[in-house]
Amino acid sequence: DTAVSQTPKYLVTQMGNDKSIKCEQNLGHDTMYWYKQDSKKFLKIMFSYNNKELIINETVPNRFSPKSPDKAHLNLHINSLELGDSAVYFCASSPTQGALSYNEQFFGPGTRLTVL
Amino acid sequence: GNSVTQMEGPVTLSEEAFLTINCTYTATGYPSLFWYVQYPGEGLQLLLKATKADDKGSNKGFEATYRKETTSFHLEKGSVQVSDSAVYFCALSERKEYGNKLVFGAGTILRVKS
Image (cartoon, rainbow over all chains, first blue to last red; front, side, top):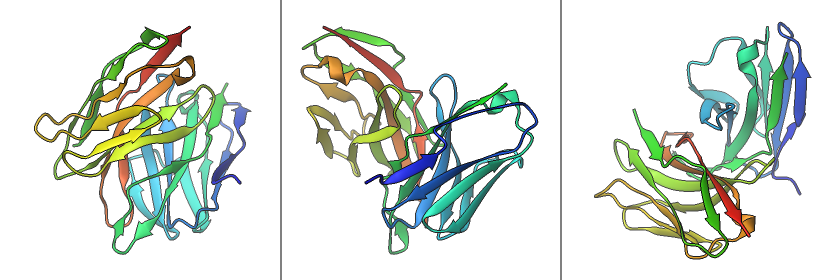
């Protein structure tokens, strides 16, 4: 039973194209995240949603648009892809307890995006 | 802002050697601290965590103690195995009302030779 799943696992595309990455979690968590891992393995948060509402946006270019149709899904759409967007993108989720978020995050397997 | 600094790798050890990967942090307030591990071609897995000062997290023979006085959370293992070869990330959690933000160190590659 996959807890946090992402599709596709690999994505190769041309500069200027628009692409989407999907994420689903079956853990019943309220909060979901997108992280970007660059070629040097450095990980940085991009977005976070709680119950379909955006709560963290880390100055990511507006070519990146997250969409949360329900609290189990957080998709990432990228317009006008650039070479620098090549990276591994990880989705994660965490539960919320009361008014504070529980601090452990569960990660998906990652999507390796290559822009040519 | 908050930040995490961990020792640069790669770290190369022989099987059964002792492992230490240093991690220090800068934070306002009292963050939770984590070690995540990424095996080749896979996503991140939580290895261990500590939520307050002097807590010790442990899992699979790995340990780390939350030291507030030295703002450190060093990862140790007494005897590494080839299967421990992976990238190890130290992270802190900035608590938000409805979501916590993980701030990661740069990662340390560990290679264990038989």
